[in-house]
Length: 281
Image 1 (cartoon, helix red, strand yellow):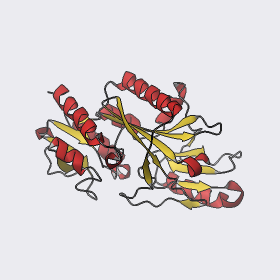
Image 2 (cartoon, helix red, strand yellow):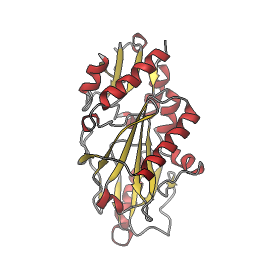
Image 3 (cartoon, rainbow, N blue to C red):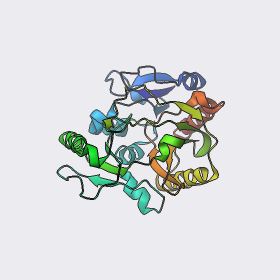
Image 4 (cartoon, rainbow, N blue to C red):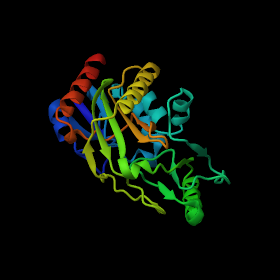
């Protein structure tokens, strides 16, 4: 039996009924003490979207699950977006990012419009978009709130291309490209995002541009060289100021897979998870 790990708010996951049916899998809440995780041939991390409230507990759980994908070392690396520094150091193009640890103020030189968010977060929670000329106070208040929670903040320029072209998400099942979607912008000027756990911006299927596909392929190849086989991965891209794609995030922990938007995607991921289960025997 395969288990799909989720959170208490979504006890039967989010938009992945077909995947569960393909696998004959059962849903289980990751922090439910009644679950015997050793009883499963494989545990697949899916909609565990409340991990941000107690990341140490989530990582302790991951380390204790004997047959987990993606595995615990991958989750430990990926659940704090400071991993973007390692991605940039590899030479992969990344949205320009500055990390502001607790006690560090906003720098004097700021982009015309900026995005502030915690390095540990899910679902765009505690993420704000501000124009420093008019909304500096609001930006400072969000930074203070992130720091008060004990988290590091990340500062990025707002890339206006997201409003015209959206954000591209490319999905990989067992290291092989599966499908792609485009997601509409969710950040509003001068505001902090307040998404509910299961909310999504408008989504549409996408035939990725060659440059997007090449960058995502390169990122996944590097990740698998670093960590070994990955059962699933999502590469989120934006168009940079020159139009070339840049990496916004590498989602290896609990990404929405948007399976309903791509015929055959549920089957592809189910096959990848069955292969992972076979490899763990």
